[in-house]
Image 1: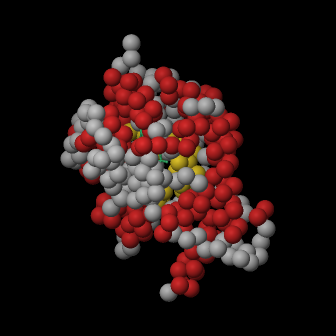
Image 2 (image 1 turned 180 degrees about the horizontal axis):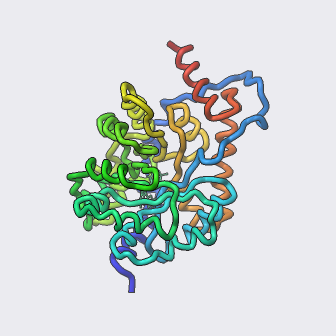
Image 3 (image 1 turned 135 degrees about the vertical axis):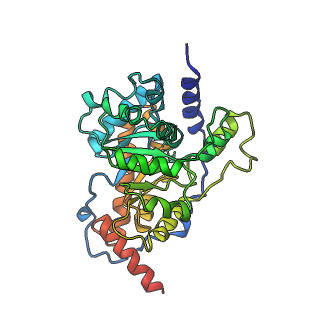
Length: 342
Ligand SMILES: Cc1cc2nc3c(=O)[nH]c(=O)nc-3n(C[C@H](O)[C@H](O)[C@H](O)COP(=O)(O)O)c2cc1C
């Protein structure tokens, strides 16, 4: 007998794979130009991509369909070196029961860099009870390298079973950063981040902030449909901060912050390697992909790997055409190109 949780997660996957819930064209990629060098003075073969520049955004866990999807993703991550973000581990958080959709990872795919995941609503619950053991339970079976906390106020406000109470949110983040044995990442879920939120997050000792902006999978749209509304006309179906704007917000928020700041990661509507290159130009350290990986993962690990290889090759072409051997050099070339225009 399927539980309400399982039914919801299954529906999320089905709806996420429908084009109707993709905020196509809204990421803002058209405003960013990767510097194009007609004389790159290098060979395409000289481009080198460090592992870990790409990651699979957190998507699914805690139900039976997730197992096949996660196996296919993990197998492809072994080959590609992409990091693997788990979907929300809320079920383990709430029940304390082992999760067959993720617990095979340590045994079968020990080399994969796994990132745990929990929503801010659950973290607030644990914080109010000062119950760290409930959070640490998420780490015991899968041994993640990072712990991602996702922010999703729009989804919580629209989904019928949502918990739209984010009081104590910042305090909960401060608390987990202080006590977590793992580096903490704070991520959005496809509605982006403002300068003011980013400024606050930059003051925490986080490992990274994934701005995850509008431009791809849109949870306002998905939850409107689940709640029986018409996403094509709903005011919140494309609500939030576009990915390009969110990346620029992050650069702005960093200004004046003393000491080291968290890495900035880009996701939300990253659909090819050129989008990834644009993200790197805007200061992202790593780039995440969700929906295209999910689509392939419902098929096979080979299909997932093919998507990963496509992204990497497109990024290589963008780097070559910018005369950049690496992502680090690309950022320098981009800064130079802005100076040339000034
Ligand atoms: C089916 C699905 C489930 C998701 N579940 C989670 C989740 O549990 N936790 C989370 O942090 N983000 C979740 N996300 C959001 C993604 O991590 C990502 O931020 C968002 O989908 C934007 O990326 P995209 O445009 O490449 O899809 C989910 C995305 C999809 C497609």
